[in-house]
Image 1 (cartoon, protein in one colour):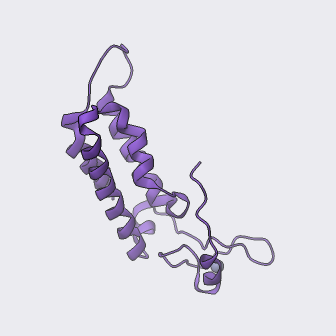
Image 2: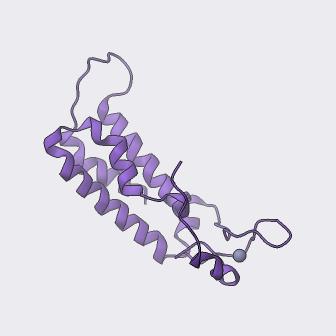
Length: 142
Ligand SMILES: [Zn+2]
């Protein structure tokens, strides 16, 4: 999965504008790579609360590219982020394998404690809490 952020970066790196007028600090290439890694990591660990991953990553990195490259940048970002999202949604064990952490059901039990059953990858709720997925509104990304 972390190959994905590298792949996005590699497809785009030739088009990154590298102005060094800011002096020291990370280069634009480094900033783009870090943004790609952060977006893919967030998609992996927090997918159900990450409303518009392609748009979010694009907005994070678009200033490092010339106007003429914007469409291409969005297409590359969207292709990989969509692929990554589908991958995670269709492989129940993928998140555990990638993060070493088990994802719990998103629901809260009647006792007010987090439900700890294993969720379905498609919506993040366990089989007993599927009814919550139907009325679920995707929260606006913070
Ligand atoms: Zn549950």
